[in-house]
Length: 194
Image (tube, rainbow, N blue to C red):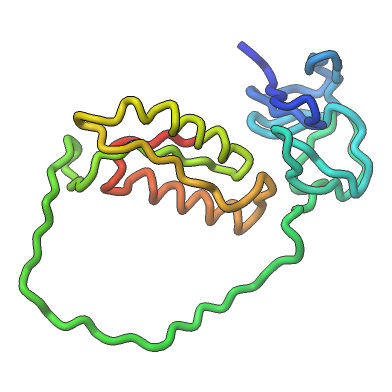
């Protein structure tokens, strides 16, 4: 099994595919890196020195900027990376009043019961990127999978993720909630999460 993943030749970080231990020596392409600290599974570590203010690049895309000098083999996370999204924006939700809905006759829709007992109205396969960095991969999968549309599969749809690879804090939590809701959506017969 592979221990780490480095996707793009320009990446200056790699991702741990298992918990990694301080002192391990890992090979990333032509570069051998000795870990300076434990790296949790799914987290990043530096492949080379990244100077303070320099771009942190993962999967070929900038995911943020180094807050401080980061040494090869050092854990790369929110403690030493700042977002590349710019200043924090605040949003105020101010609805313009509301009107109660008038009672109506019962309405019905042309749906069907899924095997888990929930109602379904479409049987689409959805491809959901977790970060904007893989939007092009999602679109390529959609294009390749269109040949399977027919029978029980009505469509294959790749959704575009509106954010980059630099989600932290509330942005990351909001993305998690949206993804959880989409996975249980009645229009989705199946969901592939990238």
